Image 1 (tube, one colour):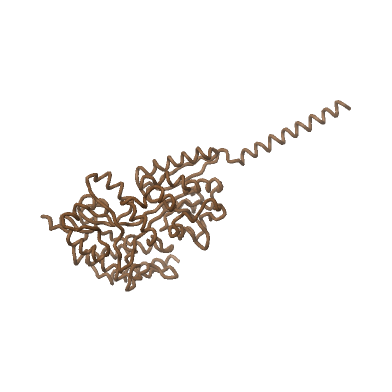
Image 2 (spheres, one colour):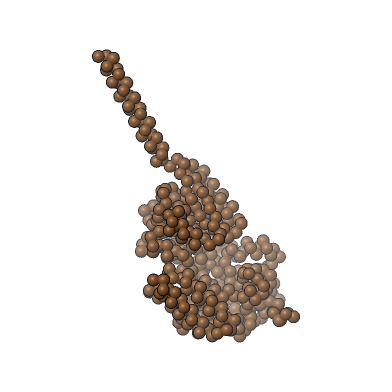
Length: 422
């Protein structure tokens, strides 16, 4: 009996031990140990990837159970992301431009972040207009990581040479200053220096249209920019280019960007984002330049704002870990480490102030612009509208057709494509 009882006791303990081992092993399999989160984005500057890698390293130090696999996609980024979303192979966390956000939010491929956000995270610290770009029907689908507005860059030496003492405050002043700053023609027929460098793209002209009540879409998200307001705003750009002959596109002077033509001295003024500051300082170190808020148009302050958010894939396997990554990258700590180089501005108001951008003469105009900027976003049909607008507007700019005809054609062709896709 004693042997039988001993055998049963040993069997019980062996069974209990096996059960504990089994449960423990299952626990290890389901624990955060060894979790890998994929993060995809693009690289607009060589320093950008290096800065992000440093931030990701700090995240892994603080979260040793999570590893981050960082992927840079510079070619056809959104096409790659959309293809992977369709094929259930998208990254757990990825960059999303406000321009593309409406489409992905509408079709439910993003994880709503509301259940993960608590009071300690403090959403009120984000610039409201930037956060709103990633919200739909009271759900937050992304947290903006950084942003830039447009500001006026001007060549201080060029201003001094023609006796201009301050940056223009209104668009009329900008046109007058542009005429003074435009230098006579060279032997090849081109001007040595234009007063203003213009980027004839919808993403740069939208705020001028809104200053006169213009818009891009109607309630059904059809193209609706052929209005008197849009015509009034854009006519200012056309007249300066064709009538005044005091502005030029980058391609007119052999440059690829507004920043480049400004740095080369081909334009005394341009509207550019914060990304131009480190570029100009590194590429044209002898250039003396300053920045100012965009001159008012039709008596109204205006500029454009471009922002990108971290979003979570709806089908992410480790959503809690993915949220921890997003939360860290957009926390005060993570954002300070990311934004300190000035490639773009932090979206948290506290970080913007702490890093000194609001008091820095070069960056202050960009920070101020966040209060009244037009976000580069306007429904899911905007990519289609953009293509048709740009094609026709450039044609009007160089005099191939009137602005009225150009906008009418652009709106009609855009809506034909939009309707055919529905």
